[in-house]
Picture 1: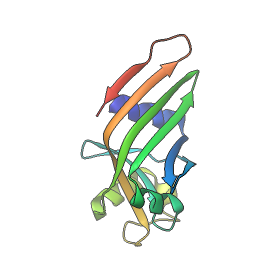
Picture 2 (picture 1 turned 135 degrees about the vertical axis):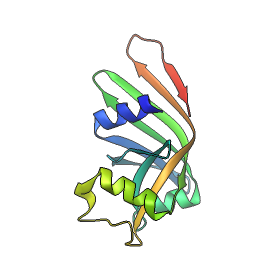
Picture 3 (picture 1 turned 90 degrees about the vertical axis):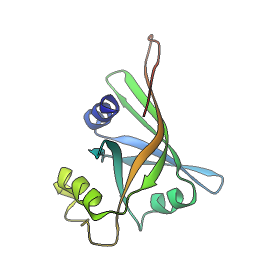
Length: 130
C-alpha cells in the first residue's frame, strides 16, 4: 500500500473512474492519504463523484508519471468519522478554505479490496493487493 501511496502522491494528479447509470465518468483528483493503515481519498458530498460512489462503490484510479503508470481497481468505502476527515484535511491544509471536517460536505473514502497494477513500457507489470 505504501508504494501505491507514494506513486499517487508523487504523480500529484490521478484520475478516478466511477459509473453513473451505464455511463463511465472520469475526474481528476489530487488527495491521497494514509490513515489507520488504509489508503484514503477525499471529495465533497455535493459533487457528482459522491453520488456515483453512493450508487456503486466500485472505482478505478489511474495515474501516469515518468513513463510508468498505475491502475487501481477497488471499492471506495465512506468513513464518516470526524477524525478521518480531520486527518485528511490536516494533510492538505490548502483545502481548508473549501472544506472542514464538520461542514457536512467533506467526505473521505478508503480503498477496499484494492488491486494495484504498476506498469511501464517494455517492463512486466507488477500487482499489489491491499
